[in-house]
Amino acid sequence: MIRARAEAGFTLVEMLVSITILSLVMLATVTGLRTLASTQNSLTVVTSRNDELRSVSSFLRDALEAAVAGSDSGGLSLGGGSNAATVFEAWNDGLLWRTSLLFGEAAGGSYVVRVAREGPQLVLRWQLPDQKGELDDWNNAPSRPLVENVQEFSVAYRRERDGPWKTTWDKRGLPGWVRLELRASERYWPEMILAVAQ
Image (cartoon, rainbow, N blue to C red; front, side):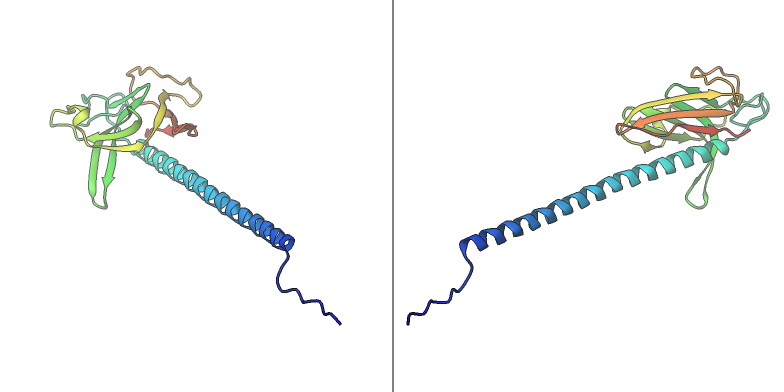
């Protein structure tokens, strides 16, 4: 009697099927990991953008609410009595006013600050006026970039709650509200409407 030899191992078809299944599992795993990494990067970008938006708008809101009011015609001034010149100015891509700033835990004071677009950045500059109330050249003032990759930045103001927004400064003293519009890194920020200290 002739005995059939027992087969040891897999056939070629079984090997091809198992390799195909293993390849599909590996492809699904790699695709899932890439999607997870892409989602994580997107979340990091959005979170960073939201943190930047929150910190910049919070700083500007606090600085405008802490504006130092002068005694001349209700405007902001450098101090020094009723003849002091108003220190508040708005133009299409910048804003200038006097406010109280705190640097660190104990250092700070009343500074004239300027927030303006300088090239691709929105930059904060600050300085103390001299004894006569004069300001130095803003290019020499200390600075800190607030927002990078700025494509558009515009400033408007209004005096009454329902009044029209103006972009040309009328030199009439302190406005009631300031509106800032910003586009950075190819995205528009939510419109910021900030109340100025009264």
